[in-house]
Figure (spheres, rainbow, N blue to C red):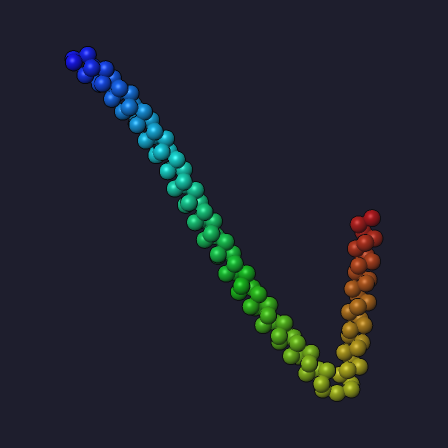
Length: 109
């Protein structure tokens, strides 16, 4: 019976060593998952800050565009003289755009 107790003790030692090894592996995996979760949280916070700044930029651009549209509508509704000036300005802007496009395309060649 004493032999059985000695053999049982070595099995217990082997099981304890195996449990310690598995516990260390599990602790390593848990720490990696914790680090990954922290990185995901930090990235989500960074993305939320970026989206919030984009939202404020879009709101300011919307305000600028709505003001420009109001001024343009007022100019169109005002009178015939303003319409003529509006046509000249529009044609001039289109010509300047094509001139700049031509110059840029010539520079790139």
